[in-house]
Amino acid sequence: MELAGLDTEAGDDTVAGLQRGRVLREAPGGRVEFVHPLFQQMLYEEMPTSTRLRLHARAFGLLVRRGARAEAAEHALRGNLAGDPQSLAVLERVGRDALAAGATETAARYLTGAHRLAGDHADPGLGLAAGQALTAVGRAAEAVALLGAVSRHPAADVETAAQAAWMVGRAGFLTGDHRQAERDLDRAAGLAAERAPSIAVEALLDHANFRHLIHGSRALPFAARARDHARQHAARVGPALRRKVAFAHGYIAFLGADLAGLEEVARAAREIQDDPEAQLADVQGTWRVEQPRLRHQVGRALRRV
Image (cartoon, rainbow, N blue to C red):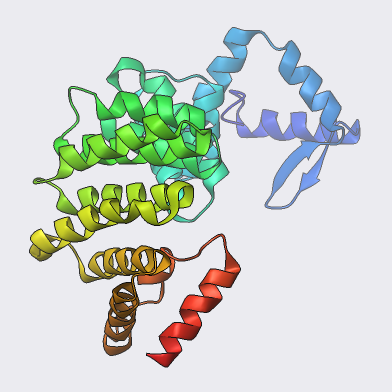
């Protein structure tokens, strides 16, 4: 009723008349809906653009006041509420919540929408989250463009710029531009080397893993860089990441016929066994390999150690 600008009595009479005419029907939650969706679509599309945008803006405000952020976010997008701080905040919050919950399509819709509506005033952190969502839904080329801009944004702090460059490298491999992806990962490691060593190690580890997929055991020097950086900054690099790096280095060395690598793999596995807070995911991501036979071979060797 508020949206239509009607008082309660007039609104009730209007809805009752439309129900009698079989235009509307009752829906769950005390709502009404159009009997024929195509009729609803026709009314919407034939409505003047200015009226449609004004109604979306009004619906957004009503829903926000009632605490219905998820529903309000859709009206913020459809109403094209560019530059409105409240609509941008709602879109970003709903998008981030969706990303955390694994609803990546929803996250990509609202985060990229918020970034578009913010225009030149978009915060680098918002761009970073939007790029994550785009990568998660397979829109890698869009992610590369957005994250590349974030990584060079003058307002981005070192950690944000480095993380964006790292993610550009990951997305770049998905697009098939491996050489540029390697350059981006190397740039990320350089940006984060001292100020955010965990990001640097992640970038170096991804570089090693991607190299391993293409060049096999010739990726060992790249894995060694990641391992050495993790050791050098052990106080600021968590144990799970240090295990992951050690495991990757050992696994790649083992594939290159270096049996010392197997001991490195076994040592990482023992650390997991001895640490009640450790998870198999600390290492398994580095050898969820494309060759099941090799995975079985490593597993069998681990059981013998």
